[in-house]
Image (cartoon, one colour):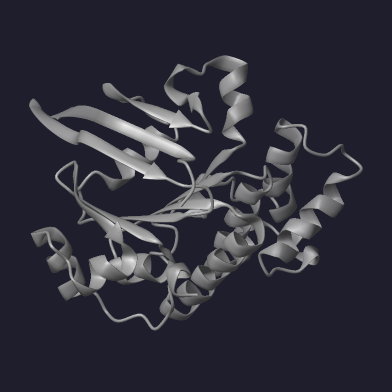
Amino acid sequence: MNAALLSAAGLRKTFFSGGRRVAALDDVSLDIAPGETLGLVGPSGSGKSTLARVLMRLIEPDAGTIRFEGRDWLAVRGAALRGMRRRMQMVFQDPLSAFNPRATVGGVIDEPLRIHGIADRRARPAAIGALLEQVGLPPSLAARAIHEISGGQRQRVAIARALATNPALMVLDEAVSALDVSVRGRILELLVDLQRRRGVAYLFVSHDIAVVRAVSHRIAVMDRGAIVETGPAADIVSAPKSATAKALVAAAPRLAFRTPADA
């Protein structure tokens, strides 16, 4: 892999719940290379979503460093942070809760184009149509309301919105866990195809190691706020070393889909 696109070291984050101190992140370090998919897997409460949100600067860590595209990501503020956010985008588990349900598909994708000045008003409808086509949706869907389309279509719209800013890295937090199996497979294939065509890197967060195996070059296994095992995706699944990875593999259904590293 190439030099790191994103590099995090020594990340710590503590929350207090019911008067008790909970270490959500405990000295977490990871790297993601350009064009790579790092799968982040672990049981519920292991710290996966906290790590994703810290990397996105949606919450701030208590300690540690993050470098993104060669810059100190935690030191960026104000307009500079807003400008850099176009290079790191997030796709959530439930796009319906992330979007205004009364908004149209076109309006959802138009927002990042407008905010970041990517296209002027006259050019944006064509840009929206092109993004919809890239995720396998017809441009005519732009006129539909978000609440009128299916869950799989909404997730494709969420991916199109994230792609609108031409990000170097997309953080996908349980992005397919709410979808049925057939739709999930199509979304995974879409993500792999987009990566091949656009060179975008992914941090793919999931509790399901079979799904993570389907799209990842490498896998990092989390438990109790720490990364307990990291390695090539095929190695983690075929010969897990940590107790956490062994339990996840034992519980996972088989998913007949090649990883990017297999291609």
